[in-house]
Length: 194
View 1 (cartoon, rainbow, N blue to C red):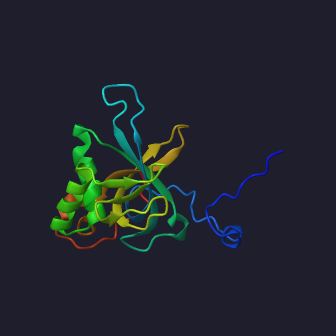
View 2: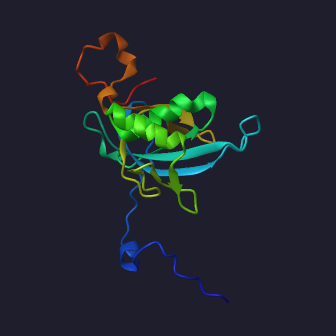
View 3: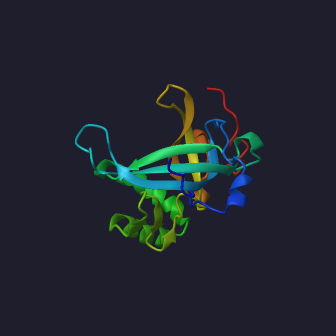
């Protein structure tokens, strides 16, 4: 019988002591600070005119909220995908702007790198960098702000989904449009009854 070769993913002693960093909790609808843990390049599989076009799968890992977040939500994963198609260009740009941060020149430069494309991926499709911006998938550390909504996975179970990517200065809940001048963030990242 053949013997299994080393996995090649790290030091054996570190792996033996590794802890599960992911939370299985479903974060409620809200606004969260999250790491872009994984970004992979693939293709759209659904039949139709966009089949075969580029798609990025993105795993965001919740690291906080705009106020104290219960520990059970830290590490929770929120998946999304961005389809690189004409009608999805704005959503792609929102994601790229969130990666770049609030500086408009940095946003424009990163968008240009994305659309050229100047994107480096490894053999498994993990995005290493976009232009000069290190993404570092599958162990990314870039922090973005996300607004989540409730959705369902392929089995019909509830899951959080990214509704939109936000800039740090724009991390304010849209449900309070009439209170735009109000700096009070009490409602952000709270459990909400729907």
